[in-house]
Length: 245
Image (cartoon, rainbow, N blue to C red; front, top):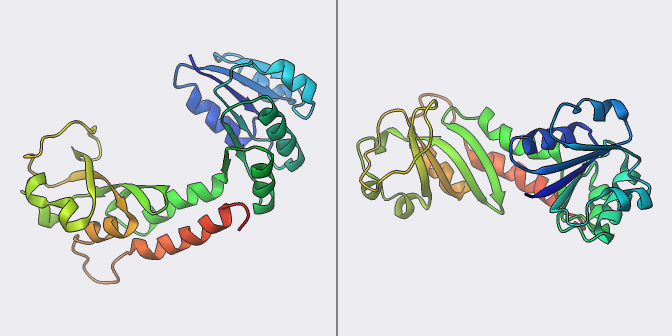
């Protein structure tokens, strides 16, 4: 069973904890606020009320073979920097830390963070495209310009098979799965499956490729929503996210 520790139960830390509680994992939570710890007294977690800025206490509290640690000290920048440095010294392989500012992120990278998270920016990257289109149901930037998205199958593909639609050749995208309507589950499909009205495609590709695919929907009146406009915003945000830039 994998072992994880969450140091600090601010908003981001709590959300990660709620996700980890859904899987089988050995979870340790540490916070100096007893009330925050007591909120999880009925959950399958190990809990310690402690100040994580004390290196000796943290060294004694953390298991020797942790798979990863999440650090969220709210707006207490010094605490997160010190905790990150201590975890690096302990040899923890994966150190995820919430950053408050760009300068904060740069220092976290220097002292050993393996992944720096800007929760508000990450949420914006996923939500903003959904606000500007009716055909895009979900949108997840993965790396660089690679995107995974849920898109309503355009009308011009209804009745065609995957082989006949030639998604990779025509649009530069890959079909991961397809389902019939938002209430259904994704499942395996055969290459000769015929797209039906209301089908939703789970696809991967560049942002431009997915935009090209989705714009086959007929837009009556007004300007077609364009992912490219949103992508430009994401690229600027991404440059800001990267330490040293």
